Amino acid sequence: MRDPILALDGLDKSFGALHATRQVSLDLRPGEIHALIGPNGAGKSTLIAQIAGTLKPDRGEIYLERQALSSLSVAERARLGLGRSFQVSSLAEPLSVLRNVMVGVQAVQGSSYRFWKPIRSDADLVEPALRAIEQMGLGHRADTAVSDLSHGERRQVEVACALALKPKALLLDEPMAGLGPEGSAKLTELLEGLKTRVPILLIEHDMDAVFRLADRISVLVDGEVVAHGDSEAIRNNPHVREAYLGEEAC
Amino acid sequence: MTSLESHIPSRSPSLGRRPLSRETVIGWGLILVLVAAAVFAHLAGEPFYVNLASRIAIVALAGVGLNLALGFGGMVSFGHAAFFGIGGYVAGIGAFHAFDQSPLFGLSGLPAGSDLMPVLWLSALLVCGLVAYAIGAISLGTSGVYFIMITLAFAQMIYYFAVSWPTYGGEDGLPIYIRNSLPGLDTNNPLVFFTLCMALLGLALFLTQRWMNARFGAALTMARLNETRLATAGVEPRPIRLAAFVISGMITGVAGALFADLNGFVGPSMLSWHRSGEIMVIVILGGVGRLCGPLAGAILFVMMETLLGGLTEYWQLFLGVVLLAVVLFARGGVMGLLAGRERYA
Ligand SMILES: Nc1ncnc2c1ncn2[C@@H]1O[C@H](COP(=O)(O)OP(=O)(O)OP(=O)(O)O)[C@@H](O)[C@H]1O
Ligand SMILES: [Mg+2]
Image 1: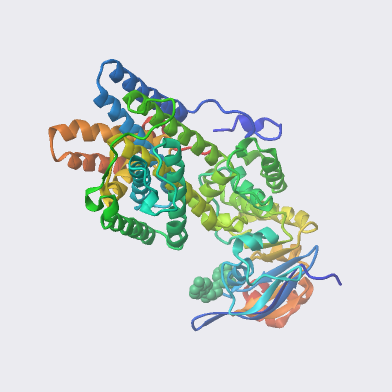
Image 2 (image 1 turned 90 degrees about the horizontal axis):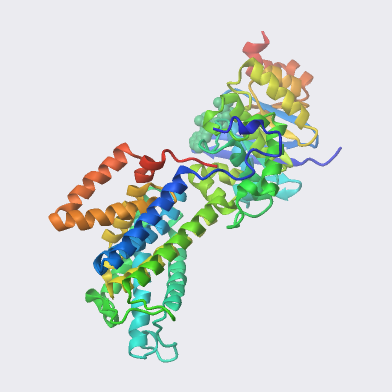
């Protein structure tokens, strides 16, 4: 078996009395989509935040290609190749899609302290950004302000921003939320095409999408991984059916 | 706005030149009006009005500095008088020691003072850059009201330091008996001095535009609009802000050096919080984050000060009303009224 790209080792996090992450260890391997499912408030977003660096775990370590991340800032982790999308999309509304995505390209090239060359005519910046945008099927919207985009398009821009980092791993927090069946189907297809290039840790409530996309599934309940396995195993796990799939499985 | 262009199949609709924007045209218009007014006043033998135009250019330059932090970087500094005043004191102290041929600060071993403007400007840039770095490094750990209060507190510290430093006049300030010089130019000629002020203002505007269109500006804009997005995209927001804050302080510092030379005097009033407020008012009047906003704001401010100030002691009341109107009804300031909403390329 190949080495995991991303590995969590014994992560633990409490907010006061609330134990939001309990001894979570899981990994993400090359070429796979690893889905993380669980009921509302299970601690999925909290887990992503700890991987990305916006929250500090109380205990445990995160490794990206064997490199420990705990002492690194959000920006440093991003430059190392952690791409992230937010549950509630977080973009610069007045700026065009292109400019939102270009900042990431700028970061990987390690050069935000350039004061002279206009970005508009900087092909080194524009072209990789456009490629990321086109990968998400948004080429025709590159010059549109984010504030003029539909909800679904914003989700795609978020993924494009993450792709601009040439990520080694993608962390996607409910990318299908609020998309409607058509949008979900489209994004599912895009993600399916993506996973051969970059492994994805996918949080998703849309179980159709999860069962179609995921190579492995981990189930998080009250901050704890209660089940883990491939789609088939999870579908038939009685514990999971009771704790989470209960209402959907019937 | 680009729906037509985006059908162009080539690499990007974003590549290539855009036509002159309305904002650029208005910016040039303001510059031309100011230059024309100064030249006309000079020909009419009215040095008072030439100096008034210089004052506008200088105050605008101070505003261009603040606008980089406040407008483009979203850092509401209420302490920019610190840089304005320090720039002024650099010019004053340099002239003071050049006048009596003594070493700087009276410390033997230090070089003598200088009355050469380029030397004084570079010194003002350097000193203000260092001070802005120190203030910014500490203050940028905070945001919102705390940032406003911390920058104000630093400026007040420097103010009281100047008041209590007797060597350079303390509370009474320091006169500059002979205007600092620039080889080959008669800086005492009001029109020549105005030209210098205008040239520096033009340079600052040009550079600001260049920076804001470059990668640094893209990062700074993102730091203002969505800091989380910038960090998630892999760029550390705080150093970007700090760099903008430092440059901002440097520009305002050069304006201070010119201001001291214009008045032949530098005193603690240049460091007071009133002055910080005044620079901020100019930026807000003209349009926060608009390249030529500070110029528009400075023209409006100095005109009101001169015209209304001649009529009534309470002109600041009217200024207050205008400011209130701008904040309530014209969020883009004068530039917003003239050039419409802000647009990002
Ligand atoms: N910064 C915080 N401070 C205190 N409590 C928090 C914080 N962030 C999250 N929580 C709590 O931690 C728990 C887990 O939240 P989290 O957002 O990770 O859930 P989730 O699994 O992503 O849920 P959802 O499916 O609704 O997005 C919740 O009870 C939430 O209220
Ligand atoms: Mg969540």
